[in-house]
Image (cartoon, rainbow, N blue to C red; front, side, top):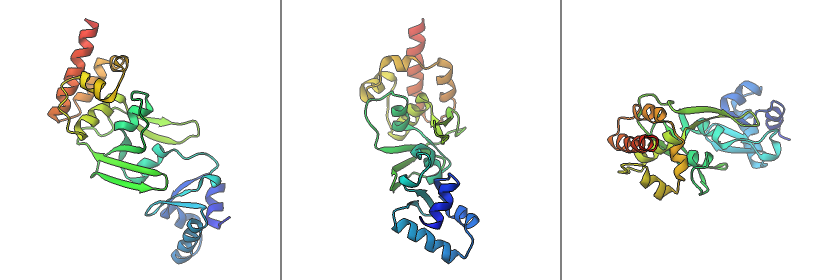
Length: 214
């Protein structure tokens, strides 16, 4: 086992940066770069993106969560759009990319761990409606609520939906999921976006909820 692999395996840190390597491993930048190159060549280490690395699966004490890595690949960001809707069981289709919203420009990263897709969505409070989640292995990730994910979806796809019927038909969301959202949450989400398209969609959704409880 490569010295670098051994160190981060024992430390139970399967994901780390080039800066982490410089702190953990004595020697010159040249010698550390050699360790990284040899670990990648031997299949012990995955080069996720420039300066970000992940131990290959046989050398992980605990599984790596792609949602947890997403903010390290490109941040600030949170998981949203189709990935969130799939995570919460709102859509039946499998999602093959980790879809995220970023504070910065839109980007995509095709990595050994899969495709990470980031879209920029202007908002007043970036993490409003985003939960800090921890999986059973202790991996931390930031996940949008389904309502926020749909608001992001309408913005990113430039949709002109005026209510939830279009979302139910297009994404095959069950009506009971739509009705499970509290009106107060929709109002909070709506206040966070300046987009008229998003505002129109959320207002229509809110009218549906208010009509169901009238």
